[in-house]
Length: 207
Image (cartoon, rainbow, N blue to C red; front, top):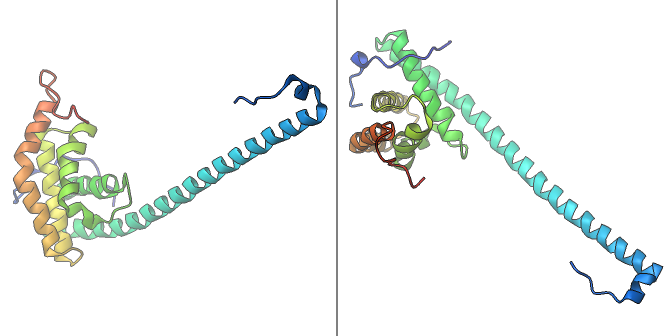
């Protein structure tokens, strides 16, 4: 199913939402020179071997990270399909469903995977939803406004409500998400308003 970028239709929302010391005579001795040169080459080879080992470890770790992310994206695709169908079955128009899909897809397939491969359930946790809507979204997303914070939060709430319905998350996970959004929405929107105002001080100056 192809999705286009739409704004959420608020009318359809029903949630609140070195130095080496050598004598000169030593330098005149060919044998000593040869020994010194060989030692340098050995040290260089050892350094190169260590660098190769470090790069090899990084490549392995990155491959594991990408592999894990791909696995999570595959599961997320299935979750998003169920979510979209659930919204359509509830009577929402396809345009509105597309917008919700885009908002949630960005959250679980971009934000939650940017630093480490996190399963979608982690998106319900206080520290993740708070950092996303109250920090990352405001500073990193060019489309961030108080309104888009509210509409994105509404999409995320709908998604996790659907995940609860299908048994993919616990009730406590959903309640943590909803409570976090309810308690922080006003401050997130105000921080966004201030951040977007060139005449106001940057509320994120410490980042």
